[in-house]
Amino acid sequence: MFNRLVHFAKRVWDRLANAADQLFRRVTQPADSNAVTGTLADLPRSRAQLLVENTFLRQQLAVLHRQTKTPRLAWRDRLSLLLLAPWVPNWKSILQIVRPETLLRWRRAGFQLFWRFQSRRRGSAHRLDALTIDLIQRLARENPLWGAERIRGELLKLGVHVAKCTIQKYRRAVRSVATPGPSWATFLKTHRNDIWVCDFVPVVTLFFQTVYAIVIIRLGSRRVVHVNATRHPTDAWVAQQLREATPFGEKAKHLICDNDTKYGPLFDAAAQACGLDVIHTPYEAPQANAVCERWVGSLRRECLDHVLVFGNRQLVRVLKEYSGYFDQARPHQGLAQQTPMSRWPGQVNVTPEQPATVSFSPPAPGHGAGRKLIARPVLNGLHHAYAWAT
Image (spheres, rainbow, N blue to C red):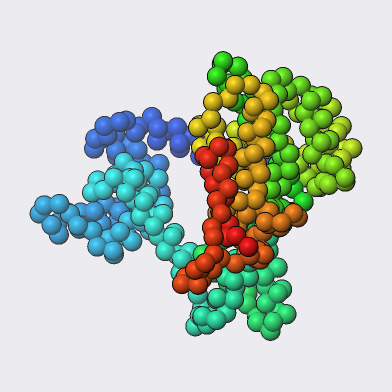
C-alpha cells in the first residue's frame, strides 16, 4: 500500500514539474527574445537539449559562412537540419536560413523517397509478350461485362498464367472504367429483334392547329409497325393504337417510350395484355430512344417540311404513304444501306453485321442494256422508288 502511494506521488510530482517547466518557458519566451530572456528560458532545460540546439545553430552558421550571397544547401546540410529539428522544441523560432514550411516540405519528400524505396520492384520484372497482351485486350474488348478475375479465369482455361494486377494494367487501354452492369447500348443490341419503340410527333397544320402523330417502330429491322394521328391523344386512344399495332398475335417483348403523360394507366393495361414490358426512358435523354428520334427527324426533313397539312385525315394519309416508302424503298445507314422490307411481302430482319440478301440484283456495269428502269413516285413526286423492270 505504501509503495503505491509513493509511486502515485512521484507521478503527480513529475506532471507538476513538467507543467511548471512549460509555464516558465512560455512566460520567459517573448515574441522578440534577447540575451537576457533567452538565458532565463534556457535555465530549466537539460544539457542534452542545449547541445542539440547549439548543433542546430552551428549547422546554419556553417552554411552562411560558406557563401557570401544567397546560401545554397547541399544534401548533407538538408539531412542534418532534418535530423536535428525533431530534438529541438523551438526549432521554428531559431531556423533562419530557410522557412519552416521548406523544412516540412523536405521531410515529406524524404518520406516519399523512403516508401518508394521500400516498395521498389525486387528482382527482374517479367514482361509479357505481345501476343498475351493482345489476348488480354481482346477478351476485355469483346466482353465488356468481364472483370479482371473473370478474364484471368478464361486465360487459365487457355493455358495462360497471368496475375490479376497485370490484367488490370493492360485492360485500361481498352476499357478504363469497369461497368457495373450491361449498358443501354448492349441491351438494345442484344434484344433489338424483340423491342418496339414509340414516340409522338406534334404537327402544326395550315390553320395553326396541333395534330399529334404516334409511331411504333420495330428496333431490329427499323420497320414502321403502326402510325396514326389525332388532335386529342387521350389515354384511351393511345391504348387503342397499341391494340391495333398487334394484330394476329404480332407483338414484341419490350416497348420503349418516354415519360409523356399520354401514356396513362389504360396504356399500361393494354401493354400488359399484349405481353409488352413498357420501359420508360430517363428524363431529358432523347438518345435513349434514338431510333424514334431519328425517324422523326427524317419525317420532318423528307416529308413534313415540304407538305402543307390541312387536317387530321390528310396527315394520316401522308404518314402511311411515307411509312410505306420508308419500309420498302428507302435505304438506311443503320442497316448497311438496306431497306427494312424486301420488295415482296414479308419482313427482312437486316442488321449491319449480316446484311440481308434481296431477291433482285442490279445489273453490272455494261450489262444493263435493254433493261428498263421503273421509277415509282412517292408523295406526289417528292421522292421516287426505283427498280428494274422484270
